[in-house]
Structures are given as C-alpha cells and as structure tokens.
Length: 62
Image (tube, rainbow, N blue to C red; front, top):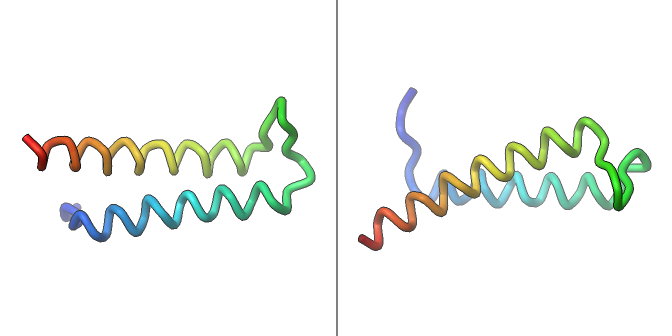
C-alpha cells in the first residue's frame, strides 16, 4: 500500500464527512438516539480518516 499525500488524505476525509452528512439527511433508520448500520460504518470511516489527517497535521507542525 502506498502512502497517501496530505491532499489526498484531506480529500478522503472531507468526502467521508460529506457522505455521513448526506446519509443523515435522507436516512429514515437513524434517530438522535441511534444510528443505522450504514451510518455507523460511515461514521467510523470518517473518524479514522479524521484521526489520520489530524495526526499528520500535528506531526508536520513539530
């Protein structure tokens, strides 16, 4: 697996956020108290990408 560039990582992070937001706007299975399985997967993907992006940003600032 090749390392992604910071711009690629940021683009994937933002795309994951958009997918989660769009899902939330249309899903009838999600509520304020519980997310559907797809929303949980999208959220986990977003969190992983966000963590990776922020870790890279932190490392670059040192």
